[in-house]
Length: 251
Image 1 (tube, one colour):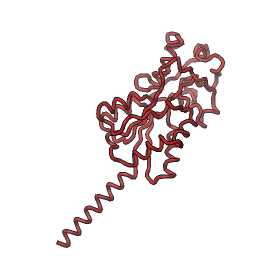
Image 2 (cartoon, rainbow, N blue to C red):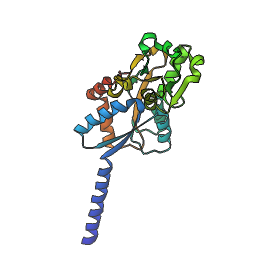
Image 3 (cartoon, one colour):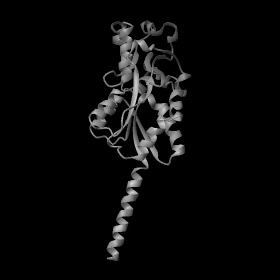
Image 4 (cartoon, one colour):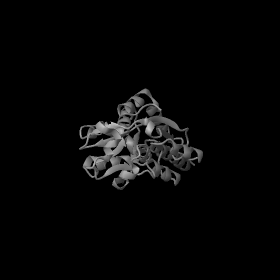
């Protein structure tokens, strides 16, 4: 009986250790516009918490599909609140949707100064390629296309458009010269690696639908205290301050 009892105790300790180990790391899916802001959020959070937060960046639409198909992602930060809302409505979330920020789009170029003519800069004859995120699955690409259509420029520049898989790749296109100009996230334009490389024009909000961004804890992340703690940190005054530093405003 003693040996059986000892084995049972060992099993309980092992199970407890494994459960605790799972709580020591979470995976966060974040829209690419959050690249610099999320890195800063994670760094600040981990200074006060022992858990590890691993972030993966990509397009919100693709993350939505991955989560729908059971991807092991604990928290989802979308560039469009519609995607986490759909997950919640499909019982694929374990928290309410939290509107964490409002994003902005800008016209950015390494060689041109878009502050002079705004959206009309896109008519410049020297421009060969214009980069935007793919509007099929990237919210920033959808808002870019809306602004282009609002300016009645689509027919004249349509053949010059090149599409990034997400807003981060779109920014890379213009930063490396693969495109002459592009519509990217303000949060990327003000980041240290880009703000000294080019100039940007903030596209007026009335030319596109608002970029209200939302987050949820997924069904996969249900019951994970580290996931809840990280989302709470993003909601805190310190988290909001970090987001504001990268051009995000409150919804």
